[in-house]
Structures are given as C-alpha cells and as structure tokens.
Length: 387
Image 1 (cartoon, rainbow, N blue to C red):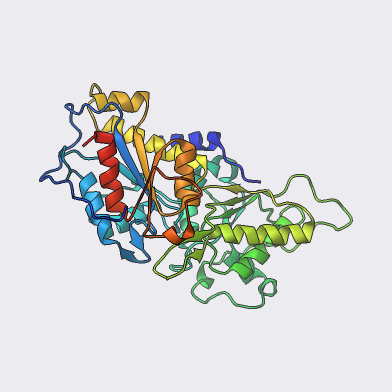
Image 2 (image 1 turned 90 degrees about the horizontal axis):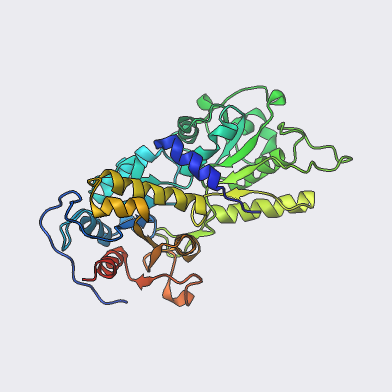
C-alpha cells in the first residue's frame, strides 16, 4: 500500500521554516531582480527534473545552460523567473547537490532550490529521530556519506546494511564488506536493538544483500536482527514501517537503454515478502509523483516569490493568494508528468531522457511535448506571457 502524508509535508516545511523544429531564443542583456512594475496576474515558476532533462549521465545537455540563462533574466522582460530542481536522484546532502549543479550549469543554486528523493524524509524525524532505524542504499563512496546526510536531517540512531553485514557475514555470504567501509561500521550488540523503521534512503547498490537484510528485519521478532517471528504465532497486524525515497521504475542516463530504479527494487522486495509471509507488504513511497513532494516544492516557490518581491507588488500579492503558475519539465511520464498533472501544474515532457516517441502516446498527457528543456522553457513562457 502506498501512502503519503499532508501532515508530513507541513512538518517538513515548518522544520525548514522553513515539436521538433528549433525555436528562436528570447534575448536580453541584463538580469534585474523582480520588479514592482511586474504586472503578472499569476507569476510563472519552473521545476526541473535533472537526469534526462538537464543531464545525460554525468554530461550536461547543451540546451540546459541556455534554458537556465533565460530564467536568469535573458528574456524579453529582462526578468528573473524562479526555478527549483526536483529529482528522484539523491545520495548526498542538498547543499552538496546545489554546489554541483551551480558548477555544472553555471548559474547560482542554493540548497533551498534542491528537492531530492530523500529530502522529504526530514518529515519523519519527529517519529524516528531518536529511534534505531535501518538506512538502505545511497552512495558507497565516500564511506559513511549517506549516513551523515541522514544524521544532518536529525536522525540520531542510524544503522546501515554494512553494519548488519559486518556483524553477521553469514547473513550475506556472497560478498564481504569492503575494507574502506570497515572503519565506519557500528559494532553494537544487535540482540538489544529494536529497529523502529527501515528507510530506503536512495537506490540500493547491492540488491541481493539489501533485499535479504530488509526481509530479515521485516520478518524479525520485534525488529531485532537475527531473530524470526515464531512460526507458531500469527504475524502482528502492524508491520515494521518501511519507507522508500522514490518509486521510479525506470530512469535514464547516458546508456542507450533505460535503467531500473528504486521502484523496481521495491517491487522485488514486495514479491519476496509476499512469498515468504503470505502477506502484502505495507510501504510509504516519497519522491515524484507523490503529493508530499509537490506540496513542499509549491510552498518553496511561493515563499521565494513572496520574499524576493516588494510586499505590495502584484507578483507578491498573487503568490500569497493563489501561488505561482508552475511548469514541471521532465522526461518520465510516470513520475514527472503524472505528479504535475495530479497536483495541477502545467508540464513539459522532453525527448532527451526516458520518454521516446516510439513508446507511443504518453500515459499521462503533458501540456506540451518538446525536444529538449530549452524548447520547454521558451514555449512555456510564450504561453504564460502571451508573447
């Protein structure tokens, strides 16, 4: 069962307080801040996916830099247009991702402009901040980086699959814990630790090991690793909670064929759990297309418009009353476009990532279908500004 929580979105924001033909470019020479002269009834804003939209694997797409320069003020109104990045990627802190994006895209980027798959897991801190949780997935280099991100969110008692594997090598005898990880392993007495939840922080790097260890915890007696619920007793009605940072079945990089994402990993775990327990696994999925992520993104853009304009300007007034007119630019119909459609945003589907014309009509119809992100920005602005 997939669940999302509007209460979690509110907690998260309070915790922060916080077409194939080429198109002509919109030209300008300077980029002033928002102006009182701005007479937009509903201010425009953008939300960008990253992989398959701005980048292909490690490579920045050439249209990406040109698109963002338009939003930085190189447009017919010489007006900056706010934008954020919403990615089902992750694995590092939002501040580190912001620095990477600023360097790669050659525009200023702050951490408040970055929403990664696991960003909304901050909303779980009131529930699990002081309890033992098993964190799964994320980068394995540098060692301990993913755990440090979770700790920075406010989770005080984070364990990883490396900790469990080092404690019980026979639990996954087909590989060993890499020597680089050993200095960071927590060597605690797991017979005394009751896991309160499992957090799939980001995509697993070793599906077999992580599937085994997740199922071990889900089938354990009272959340204690190395135990099993007594076969003679019925499973408790309340399963140990498991949270996935996103649900993408597929994602695109610089390989010629799309790759499996965390959504495929979740399906594998659900299938193993059902076959070993006879029950459906209960889980919560964050990221796109789920509403909590879009609630958070919409509020970030609305607050940005309010705080970067004069309180009496039409833009600020419109932002307070009705919020911005947001365009989601993405390459995945099942996450980017579905999420935008469900939330009431406009959307632009690009052909530079997961979606290809030979796939047939999109399952979720975008507002526009274009070749790349630059065309998406130009056409969206024309629609909003009527130019």
